[in-house]
Amino acid sequence: MLQPESIVSRLVSIRDSGDIDKSRHEASVLLEDLAMHPDDRINSYLRVDLEKIINSYSQERASHYASRAIKSIIEVKTGRINDIDMNRWREYDDIITDSLWIIGKRDRSGAHNADYWGNFIPQIPSQMIRRFTRKNEWVLDTFMGSGTTLIECRRNGRNGIGIELSQKVLDLAMNNVNSEGNPDGVVTEGIRGDSTQIGYDGIMNQFGIKKFQLALIHPPYWDIIRFSEDKEDLSNSRSLDEFLMKMKSVGQKTFDVLEDGRMAILVIGDKYENGELIPLGFMTMSRMLECGFRLKSIIVKNYDVTRGKTAMENLWRYRALLGNFYVFKHEYIFVLEKRGRRSYKKAGKE
Ligand SMILES: C[S@@+](CC[C@H](N)C(=O)[O-])C[C@H]1O[C@@H](n2cnc3c(N)ncnc32)[C@H](O)[C@@H]1O
Image 1 (tube, helix red, strand yellow):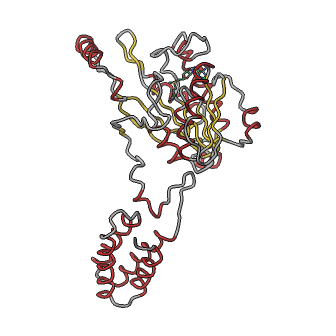
Image 2: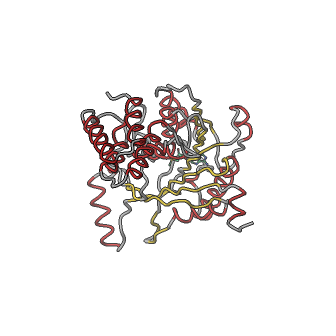
Image 3: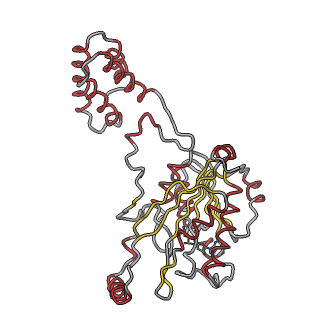
């Protein structure tokens, strides 16, 4: 393995050289040396700069690329709301930045499983936690269900609080969450509560939380799946208006406990009723905007492929052909930002 110190000293020699031919030669030799260690993580971001040096026509350009390569090795430049080292951004090829997510397989490793009907794939909280939080920060999941978010918190060294209405679901989830390793010793706590009415002060005092740095909001998609008999259960809302009003209340409460400049992630799909499409996703998103959130991104994600049993798929296809509609294959991930007072003013809204 090539030691970073030795790579840096060879790059310094290129940077400080007054001879472009010598620089090109040294860069070629270094590139060949790196090719002998294809698994070396340093490789991916260095290779591009070395190729640029080899193709440079002036020593000035070569020095520029050598300086950039040195920086990428010795400096850590993280974003304000994550631990992604922007000097080594090429290494994060598993972080999705496109708005269309076609995810082939659900992550079933460790404590993750698909037993809870209506849980989201772990890749959703995993992506959001790594993109929008730093180590040891606090994540809130307002509809905890089987605890997918809390498992991802443990894996990524973030503290997590999950709110769940059903005691039975909560108990099962916590058994599962606690079976996952916790290498960073973070707090992952499930709390029984109604997210439309909950008061967060007591919880935040108990755990010494000033504000949450990320919120995941994955409600029932109104009555598509009934989660319980409880009238407070959002899946038992008697009308669309009631569902949306309650979601606005969840949005307001979440907004209040989120740090300025941080993200709330709303995961939701649409539904059909009496042959008409109800754009539940966009309607709920618009209630969130009324709470003061700013829309950063709309991600369209394919449904978990394991969900569709062939017989059901055929039935839906038959119904779609007969009823002139299209079978849902997607849901939405809305990325909402709590805009700080300063940026709010800047945008001329206050
Ligand atoms: C779509 S599921 C969330 C699944 C979760 N993301 C997971 O991966 O397991 C919605 C959850 O919200 C719960 N729920 C429904 N109404 C609620 C309310 N008013 N407050 C808190 N939780 C509620 C349901 O019991 C259900 O577990």
